[in-house]
Each structure stands twice: as structure tokens, then as C-alpha cells.
Image (tube, rainbow, N blue to C red; front, side):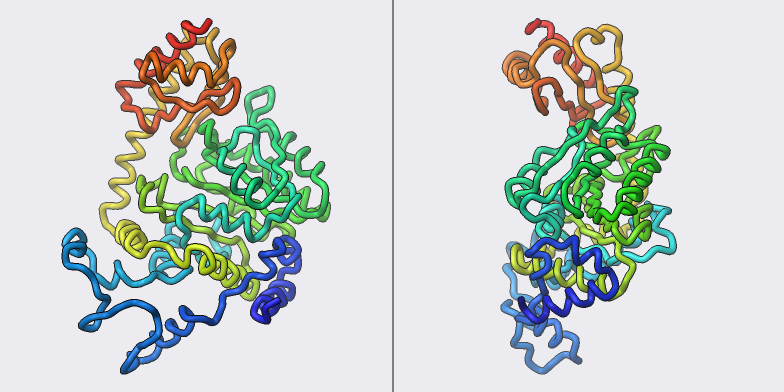
Length: 429
């Protein structure tokens, strides 16, 4: 094992030995090399060296070299904020700005310490980093049975984790805390990875504050039974809470709850700020101890360096300027209002008595989506039929469940959309 990795592991063990037990084999071996980037950063910290012949970019007239025909498209951005490599951990001002944002959005984080958010190439990359750091072959990964299919690739196929599901809803159509508890307590071994995605994809459900407290109680109980829990909070649709739900991430409530619980918040600008193609996300570790926090940051930087090297600089610059814009809050509220109006229309239509025999909607109160359980027809058969006859695109989640994204349908078109889906069901029955 590299001596740098050994030093990081000793730092973790000194302050937070349970985190060392949580790391995967590759997680234990990861480190940030003292190579080109670290040496270049050291050179840049000096008082403008006469010649900086470190990092492999071309410069001209004291700045990065670039094509004029490209720069013409970015007249509002300085070349230095576009063309050079961003650090593997991301632009420092962006990391600090995102920290301030999540502090404002999550009251439970008040007076708590955590690792400065590290920039990822959007949410999937953040989940992949977490999988590499913590999941070994055969490790149990607990997720609700309504989950984003990409988890199969990230935690199952790539890392060979054993994905164990529990019913998201109980018989009362509430969050199934008992199912979560059973899945955790039946998991073999001492380490379990728990993935919680709220607002949930595909159902658009976020637990109520009361339900959230029961989730936290289950996690604490499991930790007190000497189980090491890596709790991944997939907060992709954070902030899109419309009614009857927790209005912040569980992340803040888990920090410091028990030394055997490591909360990891994975979020980003992609979904909540409507910039999907810019691919800017963040991974944030709920670790209060300084040495352990630094070690996790270094291991994450090493992983990023060894895969994508660093995220796109231009995208980070755009998001940073957006967060600092005096129009940010106003425009975000405007878009939230549009999304809530679509949600309210969908809720008013989908529960109409007319459709009662065709489907049962799963509870939804947030996010981009809602999901229906079809009573008589196969979801994939219906999905194809809707495409071919009614020009309607939906997602078949499994044999019975159909996901509908009200986020991408104008409010005035939602009633027609649902009627077409109903007609499709009628055709097949």
C-alpha cells in the first residue's frame, strides 16, 4: 500500500476507526498523489514565479491560450475561468458557495461540521465515488423497492454489491420503516450501505417529518447494535417539496448521531437548478473530525484524479455565478411555482374516480415524478402501446408500475395526458 494511503488510513483510525472499517478495499488504498497537479498548485501559491513550467496547458500573454471563435460564445466569462483545468476537488469558491447554500437549506446543519462539498461530474458520478469508496463484492446495499435503475449498474454491476430491497410503502401507504429495519438487521456482516433518495425517483415521495424521525431512530438502533452504516443521501431533487413532507435532507440529522453512522450527501445543481447538461454535482461527507475529514477528501480527490481528472471548468464557473446572482432566489422561486402548479394539477386529475379501476397512484408530494400501479395491464405493454397509438412517452418501472414525469408536461396538458393513458389502458382491457 502506498505510504500516502497508509498515512490517511492512520489519520482516520485515530479519530474515527469505524469509518476505516466502512471503506472498501480500494477505498483503503486510495490517496491523492503528489504529482503534477499538487506540484503545480504549490507553484501557483508562490508569489507569481518568474516561469511556471508545471501544468500542461498552453499560455499566451499571461493567460490561457484559446481560440477567438470559441471565446466569442462566452463573452461574459473570463478565459481564466473557462480554459484551465479546474482542481480535482472543484473550484474552491464554488465549493464554499454550495456549502453556504446547503447550510441555508438545512436547518439541522446549524453548528455542525462536515467536509467542504467536493465537486463531482453530476449526481451519477457522486454515487459512483461513494460506491468505489465503500462497496466491496458482497456488501449489502439496502434500497427501497422503488429506486432509480442506475443503482443496479453503480452498486451492483460495477462494485458487485448485493442490492437488497424493501417495500417503500407499508399497507397504510406510509414510508415502510419496519421494512427498512428488517432489511438492515437481516444483512450479513457488520457493514451495510443504505441508500435513501428523497424526493424519490420514481414515485416522487418524500417522508413526513414524523416518518423521517422513525427512519433516523432505526438507523441509530442499528448502529447501537454495532452495525457500521454508510448512509448515502441521494438528494437529486432536493428543494422540490410541495406539501406534507420533510423540507430538508436527513443528512444534517445524521451528523454526530452515532460514530458508526457515516452520512454522505450527494446532490447538485443538475435537477434542482435545471442545468442537467452542465453536469455539476457535489459529494459531502458528514464527518466532524478534522483529520478524518481531510483523509476522506484526499481519497476522493485521488479517485477523481484517477478517473475523470477533474470536472469541466466552464460549468463550474456558470453555476458559481448563478449562485451569487441577485436573481437566483427570485428565479428559483418562479420555477418552483411552475413545478408545484403541475404537481397540484396532476394530483387533482390522477385520483379522479373515473380512473379508480385502471390504476392506483402511489403517494407523491415532491420532485419531478409520480407513479401509478396498474391494476389489469402490463406496464411495458402499455408503455409501448401508448407510444404507438397515443404519442405518449412514459417509463415502465416493472410489470405493474408506470412512471409519469409531470415535470416535462405543461400544466394545461396534464389532463389530456392522463386521459390518453387511460384510453390506452382501456384498449388493452
